[in-house]
Length: 313
Image (cartoon, helix red, strand yellow):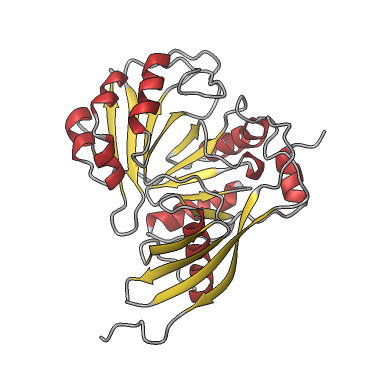
């Protein structure tokens, strides 16, 4: 039986605009096994997991569990755990880290403020501070969610870690199992699919310099899917690779048709037409689903740059 990632790769399904949406990521170290819904089916207190799900709903904050690559079956939970928060909006992206012995203190965070990109609550509650190490590369490895993530993600995470790449973590869920191995790079929040070790190393080198690698890029999680499609299309058309050079400043319309405005820091603006279609033929979107359907895809049908948009000087 073919896996969802095998079928997606065979059909050459486009990966653009398939990243999860989150303005801010909150990551808690939790070794050991993970269930399909890891916040409530791991060694983390399920009551805490449910409370975090409720508290972050509608705030733009997405919570995920992370662990170091390697053997992890029923590993003892450390007394002190890593916690990261990363805001992904261009021009305001940041990554802060902390250590905590009491993960329940995460419930004291102001999640609405975190979603807006304010890190003071993270720093105050958890004694967080700016992360001074390499960018983080989160590799989805949760086989209980989809077997492709374990079959393809775990070897990638192990290879990267074994080769000395810093900032590698396994993560519970990034969405888009059919694009396994999937990777999220923070702080800028660009997601990648069908990732290989050499590509991830290139992406991390670029991230250290504030640059984006477009090969295998699924989009920036700061944007909804139409914005992801438009931003990547403008990057390709303009040859712009600086992470903070482009911002999605407006999206008008509704499925299946949007007009998205993408602004450059130099004053240029592009108007991008994006339409939604179905990736055919019908098939399950993941190995864990038996429902046949056409995964939604975002197609850029026009990119317009007004000649009067550039600012003087």
